[in-house]
Each structure stands twice: as structure tokens, then as C-alpha cells.
Image (cartoon, rainbow, N blue to C red; front, side, top):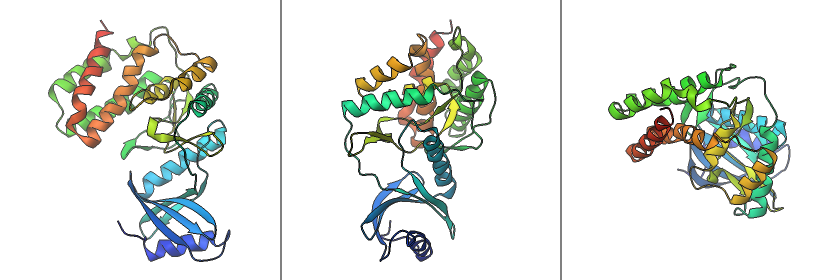
Length: 294
């Protein structure tokens, strides 16, 4: 990782930001993330946050941030520019200094997410494919949530797992789950809600004014339970988040079972991205879900 990107990108962003301030553009590398490198840019007394790397991943992220901004419930970084220069993608956003999570901010986040989830959308899916981490996430739109989740979420991840050599017990157990998926939705009819899509504990923070902000979305329209399930997976959120969310948008009693289903999607994705360490967790989730089918 260098201390500066390509001269072409330096020139492009310098020209773009010159409309807002004058002086020499400085670059500070912040480390690598999904799809590329993170940077802090400074021009005069103003900072920006920049991601460079895979242009498809960054364009999809920009689309998701703009969708969340347009919805108006959740605070996300504002997108200033997204594009590609000589094969290198970039996503330029506002710089947001973040504090650690707090109970007050968690409650505000729960209420804001509930407001977003209570706005019913026309169809499940999204107008474009995007990414969950570095994995493609297909979002063909339709009216059948169970079919959408069966094919475009579980089915796709299971095919990737098989290609990576995870056949045998994983595929056999998952076949029963996929076949009986509809039973997990008895008495419950999800409606399309705009989802963050990757709302784990590392993808939110607190601004200086105490307000919550969310990052790195993988948006689509789906069952709102899937966003809540993700918040409970890798680290969890403060209790005040769940209290506030449920006050405004109570969860169906069957969520306790479907939580395992929605978490399975992300665990399978981690299996496919990071390897064997997530296999036992995936098998455990599938086993619990299959026990609910009989």
C-alpha cells in the first residue's frame, strides 16, 4: 500500500475538490478494506474520506448510500463523487469523525431504523446487483420473498460453497432446509422494506453531536427481520437499540426462528470468503432450522 494513489487519480480529485477549496491536496493512507484502500484527503481546512479500488464494489456502495440518504431515516456519509480513472475506482465521501457507541445513540439508531423499515416498498430486490463484502449479491426484483431468499441468497451462497469444496454434510443438510423453507414463514407475511443489508456492529458509529451514523451498506428491499438478525450476529448492538426498535416496530413471534435463517446467509458468506472456520457455525444453524421443519 503506497502513501499516494496514481498521478491520474490525484489530478482528477484535485481538480474536483478545487471547486470547493484551494491549495495542495494531501493524502493519508488509512489501511485496506473490502475492495481497496481507504484514505483521508485534506484540502485547506477540509477533510474527505476516500475509498479506492474495485470500481464495481464502490459504485454499488455509492448507490446504497444515496438510497439510504433519499429515504431520510438513517444518517449515512454523503457521497461527493464516484467514478473510475485509468482502471482505478474511487468513492469520495464526507469525512465523519466517529466516537464509540453509546446507549443514547443506540436508541436513536433503533428508532431511525424502525422508521425506515415501516416504509413499505413496491417489490423485493433492487434495481441493480451489488455486493455483500466482496461477494456478488444478486437482487432480481419480484413479489415472492421466500423464492427470492431461497434462490438469490441461500441458493447462491450454497453453490459458492460447493464450488469451494464444501459438499457432503453441508449440502445435504441445506437441501432439507431449502425444500422446507416456506414452513418457517407460517402465519407471517413479510413486506418489502429498504434494508441496510450488512448492519453488523462494525458498521455504525456516533457523531460528535451524539447522533448515530451507519456505513458500508449492501442495500435491497427485503424482510426487515433480516436487518435485525444481522445486528445480533457479529458482536450485537446495545440493548437500547432493540428496545427502541421494538417500541416502534414490534417483531413477530416467529422472528426467534427466522433469525437463524437470516444469519445463515451471512455465515455462509463468511465461509465462502474466509474459509473453514465458519463451517461448524453454518451446520449448527442449519440443524436448528431443520428441527423446526419437523
